[in-house]
Length: 440
Ligand SMILES: Cc1ncc(COP(=O)(O)O)c(C=O)c1O
Image 1 (cartoon, helix red, strand yellow):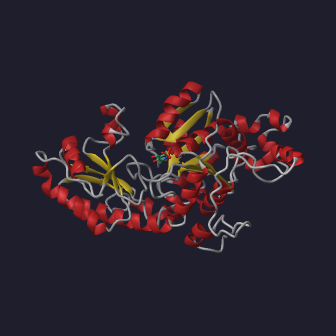
Image 2 (cartoon, protein in one colour):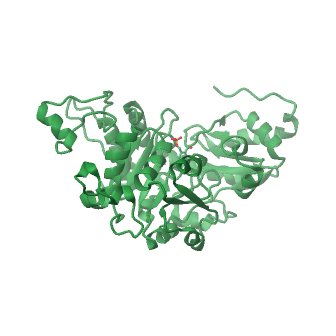
Image 3 (cartoon, helix red, strand yellow):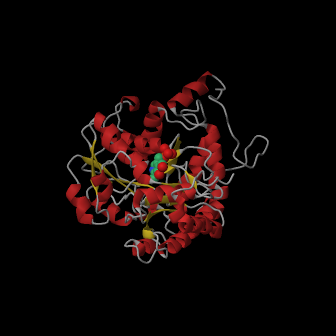
């Protein structure tokens, strides 16, 4: 539906009234398998020559409706829904790389992706390097190796809101025949469409803004369908080498520019098995229908709160690209004109002890390792997501003991500021007091 706006597409895209009973909402198909009408249909479904579903690990109509919707919203050729965002990242990498290959990633990324690259994939012979100065093309150029097979980054990195120039990194990637994979979890397609900026594959944790209500986990892989896998002088082995299930042809020979998704869906997802529960797919589909409304509201409130935090004497710094003081402000206006997201960090004076007392005193903000929820959330990265890092590593990444990450929800912004203000005002006295009861 290219002629319609984002909000129309998020409601109507990918869904057509069900033939049976005329249900308007994509129905929830809670079925492990699907009946074959006859012997020949079973053979055809396995061969891929007869359309339809056979087994939910390989595909499900509820899941497929969400996949069509996300592909449409991201401007992609096709999308694959999996059980978690972590599975989406792992499956993408494992569909392009093999042992001996190398990933080049921005340094400022979600810690789970970083640990997957650095620790788990290392056991399978895949190595990684991280680019700290992620908007300097020369820094990426210097780190590309003969065995590099993909570049990776996040448009709005978590937790520091230190935006990535996706266009710039895509140019570097393509100059070396490499695909760029962007995790678009924090920006969502409402605020940034990485495929339009040159990225080749987009991944999401659908558990966050897409689902939106903190009830379901999910992940999405979106293929732009434009990368020329066959022409690269740094070819992906899984996609370009002969495959026994294709009578010796490669995925590129058989599927051309759709080779990546054909492999990700038909081989990686089918054999590694990260299928989403159809019920979760249903909840994610429901969430996406209000995505733009939530993101617009959350992002506007986040900027208002960041601006307010900047005026407070108790605050050392605020990491939000929407602030005129941010080194990422100009980039944010250019690449994220609809707002720079609602997940950002601020650093309170007084280090970890002040952060602890402040966080414990909040009543509207839930202390949670989650983001993109309708509820506002708070987390202390240095003692949770980043606790395994050394003090030197934390300092180098700008994750200090006084830093708190906020994920702003859809509550009234004045109430959120009121909660923060009350905690600041009481900060000196809080040391002696127990935490207040959380709003139920
Ligand atoms: C940017 C980003 N990518 C991926 C993930 C992993 O997603 P999930 O928790 O759905 O596995 C997260 C989780 O916080 C995230 O923030």
